[in-house]
Image (cartoon, rainbow, N blue to C red):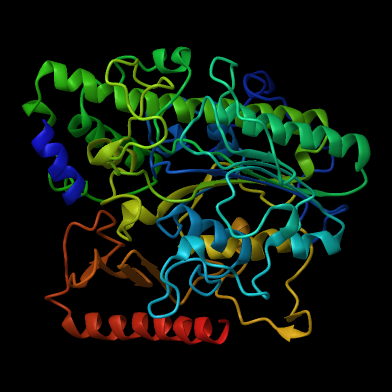
Length: 530
């Protein structure tokens, strides 16, 4: 087992006219009598809540074909939209930079730029690369952050009015480094009942309660950034127990079952991507190995399950504030599920109960294959499994469609301009008297009304020497430094199973040149900002 673990590390839902009683199973909804307004005809400024998962796979949610029970997110999908080709940057910190600025992370100096910035995680944004709160506050918004930050600077220094920052991502039950309004809080001892996902939602709810008491006349932006289901795989034992035995069929059978459900839902129509190199067939494992591996996915599922319930709590608070009908809610993940195998924090006691504070488990390639099914590879890679995320949008005042899918490709660089349009604002042309470079992101609000209403001429990726470039349905991708380009037609091969680079060499050369031209542009911009 140890031999192939080492190899792994190297090889790596339409709404059906739901009745009131069914709706109230999860969180109650206020219904306005005026029906749904056009996007441009708001009687009042709209609130925005952005939920961000961390390391969650493309197909983990029930409404995307997964086994996890996610009734609250499933309901948001029934009452809104699901995007089937929404992209992130393959990693946590560049995705966060792109989400909150509207720029590719390299443009904002938050990912590696060859010859300019060696460590993107430590990069400092140029003065013009402001975060969303700096553009929302002049519109009268209060801005709240709860959860992971993973950006340069501090939340309150970057326009947020309140913040709970959980910096210690290695201890879901007992963080040593967390902050309230940028000020350190005492470490949390074990056995207190603290759990990161519950705490992040709890602080977000506290901020919303305070908003109602003190700032009810103002709109709000709430950025709720869970550290779930990021490793270590830790969850309350009662949550894990709900999934005992659910994954005993193994990754091969479960991947095929997910694909079948996703096809029925209309999420994808492709082949199952090849099993990640180094991952053995489930049938070759011993009973003891199968039991040990099943525990990993049971904990991962429990973490996503708990996140869904905590999102339900936030939704209940919005309903209590009578704000639900005037709030745009978005949910996505910062990258695909992680195949990383490592031990940090307090280490892994092999005798500890899996998922407890004394354990440190990860999904590793076998289960990342399932979480990202049917797509290829995982977090860090720019193949579809690393960069594809579910995106759910529910907005009563701006989304008339219920339960529909949107297949137009879009990217996290589009979220900042989208949120600004929902808020009734726009980014200025300059900051502190200096011009702001044009941003590649654009508002996807038109897609809320009609699929294909707005499109990107291209999309670009670069992370840890993993490269990708998409034009229309064509995608060029390469895994790692020195690896050759692969070419796929995503219209027929979303799983990236059939490399067409040898058949279309001229297309490869042309697309590679355009990928390089963008990198050169970002290098020049980076040098100007040093």
